[in-house]
Length: 130
Image 1 (spheres, rainbow, N blue to C red):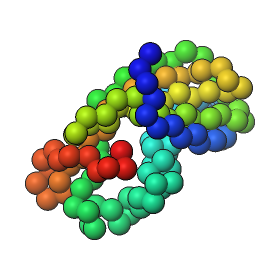
Image 2: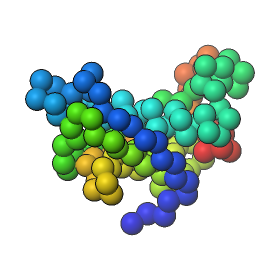
Image 3: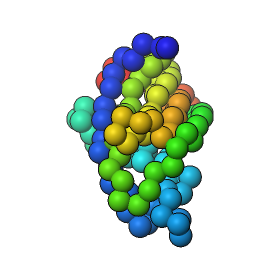
Image 4: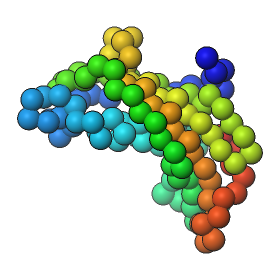
């Protein structure tokens, strides 16, 4: 297993809008949960995405994504999204994101994030807070 460089946890409650007609979390909703957790991780580091692109001339984008659905989540479940950087290079950060219920892993995602120059849309070095 790769070493976790940084870990962040975000509690999530499953609402009607997150589920299908059977009360099971819809597959794409897990990606929304993971996105929220990465955004909150940045906010916890003092990075406001609303102003960051303009002030730092950089934005963060998903380059690659792998997701594995192990068990379903259901309406009204209390979940935790655990986000850890498991690998970092000068230009890329690899997040492992686990969605858990009572310490049971429901979904595992690996998300590669890169920084882009806002104007040129070309890759640039990740900032130090990654």
